[in-house]
Amino acid sequence: MTGPADASGERDLPALLGGRPVRETPLPYARQEITAADREAVAAVLASEWLTTGPAVTEFEDALAAAADVRFAVAFSNGTTALQGMLAACGIGPGDEVVVPTLTFVATANAVLQQGARPVFADVDPHTLRLSPEMLAPCLTPRTKAVLAVDFGGEPCDADALRSLLEPAGIPLLFDACHSLGGSLRGRKVGSLGKASAFSFHAVKPLTTGEGGAVTTDDEALVPRLKRFRNHGLDRDFRERQQGNSWEYRLAELGWNCRLTDLQAALGRSQLRRLEAMRAARDRIAGVYLRELAELPELDLPPVNESCVSARHLFVVRLRLDRLTADRGTLFKAMRAEGIGVNVHYFPVHLQPLYRERCGTAPGDCPHAEAAYERLLTLPLFSAMTAADAADTIAALRKVLRWWRR
Ligand SMILES: *Cc1c(COP(=O)(O)O)cnc(C)c1O
Image (cartoon, rainbow, N blue to C red; front, side, top):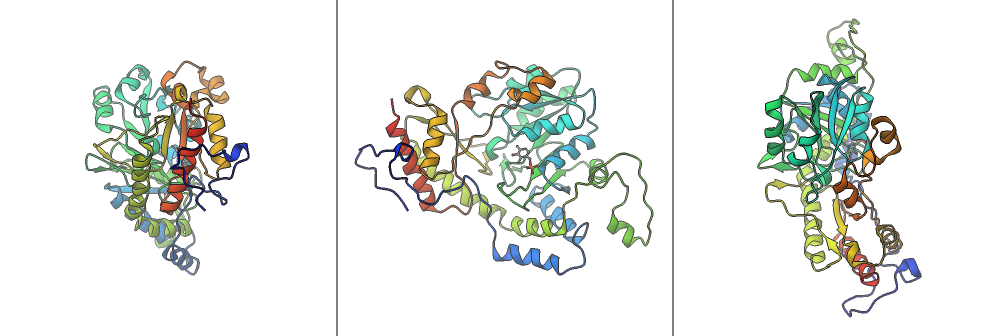
C-alpha cells in the first residue's frame, strides 16, 4: 500500500494534482476497536433478562468509577446528555454563566445553552491550545457559576492551576473529559480532577459503547440528581421499583430519558478492560509521529508535557503557513487525496452563527484560537492503527509538504 520511497528528495506529484496516491484504501482519522470479547459481552446481554436499566449498567458504572479513581459514575446515553446532566446536577440554569474554551466541539457550549445558562467563551493558551488561568481570569464575573474545561486532544488541563484561581472565588471546576479517559495529571486520574467530569463513548472516542456517556464525581450529593436527570426526574428507576415490589414513584422535578442500555454498558465494561492497552497503542503511534515529523520545518508538533499522561485521542499538528505556498484547505484536500483521513478540530465555537446571534460573539474575541484554527490539522490516530498506517500518513505528509514548501 505504501507509495514510492521519498528518500531521494525528489518531489512526487501529489494525488490532488493527478499523481499516484500513497494509499488506495483510505485511512480514517479514527475508528473503533472491537474484539471477540466485546461481541460476546454484548451477545450475553441480548440473551439476558435486562436490555436496559439492568445490572450491566451498574457494573459498567462501578468499573468506570474505579478506572477514574472516584467514588461514583453515572452512565448516560451520550456525552452531550452527560454534560447536560452534570450541569443540571450542579444547579446551573437561567441567569448563570459557565466559562467554556472556544476550541472544542459544539456540544460543550450547547449543553450550557440547553440548561438555559450562558456560555462565556475563553480563548486558549497559544502553546497548549487548552484553557489556562491567564485565559480564564478575564472571563470570570459575579455570575460565573462554573468553569467547564476541555481536555483538548486527550491531554488533561492543568486542573491544579485552574483550581487555585477558582477556589478563592468558590467557583467549581467541571471537566468535559470526552477526549481524555485513561489520562492522568501528576498521578491523578482524569475523571477525578474536578468537582465532576463528563465522558463520551461515541465510536471515535478513547472507549466506545457506540453512543454513550457518563459523569464521574466524588460528590455523593450529585449522584441522585444525575440519576433523576437521566430518568425523567423520577426518584426510582424501573429496576429499583421491581426489586422493591412496588409500582410507586415520585416526580418532583423535570428530567429526561437519557439512559444507557445494558447492551452498550456491557460493551463499555468489556472495552474498559483494554483501556490502558488501547491508550498505549495510540501512545506508540503518537511517539512515531513525534519522532518522524520532528524534522519537518513546516509543522509545529503538539508540545510535550511531562506533568501528565495523555489519553492521545487526537494528534493535532499546526501548519507553519509562513513556510508553505498553500493554505490549510488545500493541504487538507491534498492529504485526503493521498488516502489519509485528516480532519480539523475545531472551528472556534464562538464564531458559529448560533453563538454570534445568542451571545454576541465576533471574530477577534479569541485571537489565539482563531489564529490556531487556520493552521490545525488532525492526523489519523486510533488504537487499531498499524505501523504501516502511520508510515503512510508520514509519507503522505512529507510528500505534500515537500510539494507546497515555500
Ligand atoms: C464527542 C464530544 C462531545 C459530545 O459527545 P457525544 O457522545 O457525541 O454526545 C462533547 N465534547 C467533546 C469535547 C467531544 O469531543
